[in-house]
Amino acid sequence: MTDDTLYPFTIEVSPLSAPKGHYGWAIRKHGKLLERSDRAYENEAKAYNRALAAVERALHGGADARR
Image (cartoon, rainbow, N blue to C red; front, top):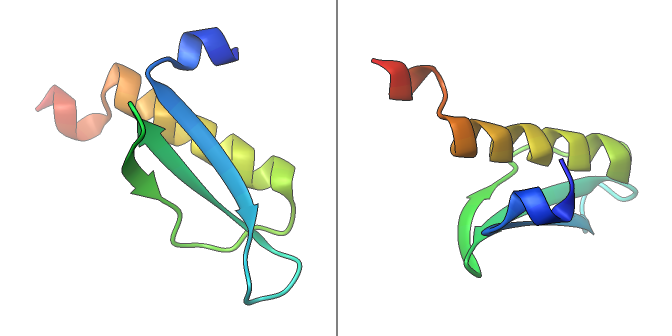
């Protein structure tokens, strides 16, 4: 997915204060917080990939949406 296909979502990956050296992510839809990670990831790439998977679930619906 490119940034164009993520619209209206944005992904923010940022370093966490604890544990040091780990990252978290947040997903915003039209600027409002939609979802935030509850885990710490070892690097930015892992955090971004998990956030991207969450956006795809939001766009295409997860298992809960199929019921």
